[in-house]
Structures are given as structure tokens and as C-alpha cells.
Image (tube, rainbow, N blue to C red; front, top):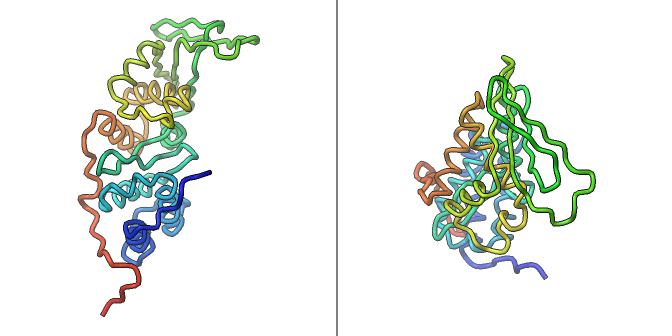
Length: 249
């Protein structure tokens, strides 16, 4: 059975604000892609239902994280584009694996991007150089539960250049241990290790590639989240709060 829909005053008040005229106007200014302000607000409410711990966060941080999603044109939720993550009383924006790919593809200077996990039994060779060498042939008879050994990312540029990065399993786990604050069973590091490994190596590669300003912004915010820094996304959000059912004079 799923979690009960939160019905307390916090949910009702946040719902009232998100669907209210003030926030809808701000979301309309922020939304730059196909998503509409009302859809973004309702997606946020769905996330509050799925993760009631978000209601322990300050409303301002929830609005700020949602505004960041709107500005980047990424819907938060299970699609893996972006997430609203509760850290104590702070809701933080976190980029997803599919979201970071989406943002990188927006750069007019990027011609291709590929990221994969290498498993025991795969043929894999790589070497730095000009040009670099990277060859990965997945095993046709890979065993179920085969251990991952590496993850890599290669970004091609429209000028014909390549930016690549290879990380070993131990290097990825070191990043996870140093920066990932979540130890919950539903953490993506538990449920989708491969995607998180690819996201990690993509971030390292993108910092040396001509990616979009949006991608750089999302990566910077994601880094802040991982090291425990406050993103302060709610500091510029000024929305007039109103109790549910309350009328204005």
C-alpha cells in the first residue's frame, strides 16, 4: 500500500500558494520550455504526496527548488530529470541522470555524448592521448549480478574534438561515500547504481566540455547539494502566503 496523502495544514497551504495567482505568475516567467506553470505546480504537489518528508522543509525552499526546475525546463519526479530532495528543513534541487543529458544536449557546441557502465566480462580498453583510445564491447553472455568495474563518458564537440573521462568502480564509490548524504533504501545509489555512476562521470566530464550554461548551473547546484551547502534557492522567492479558503479584502 502506498503512503497516505498528507492532509495537514502544511500541505494545504503549500498547495494554495503553488496554485495561487502570485506563484503562477512567477512560474510563468521562469518556465522556458514546454511545461506550463500549472503543470509544474501540480507535479510539485505530486512529489509532496510521494515524499511527505518534504513537508518538513521550509515552504520557501520548496518554492525555490521548484522555480529552479522551471528555469531549467526539467520536471521533477520519477522520470529522472530532476528531484526535490528533503535535507532536514531544506528542500534542495538535484539534477537527475536524464536531466543532465538533456541539458548537455542543448549546447550547440556538443555533437554527441555517450556514457556507459562497464561490467566484468566486457572487453574494455582505454588510454589517454591525442586522440584518446576508448573501446568497450559488452559481453554477450554477461552473468546476472556481474560486478561493475568502470563507468565512462565521452562528449564529442562540433569542432571535431573529444572530451572523455573514465572512472573505476572504487573511484565512483569514493565519490558516493564522500558526498552522498542519503543512506535510505530508496536512494538512487541503491535502486539505480548504474545511472548514478554515469551521472557522476558525466559531471566530471562536462566540467571540461563546452556544455550549456544551464548544464553548468545545474551541476554547480548539484555539487552544492552533495557537499551539504545550502543552495539558498528560496531567498529570492517572494510569494504572498494565504491560508486555504481565506479571501482577500
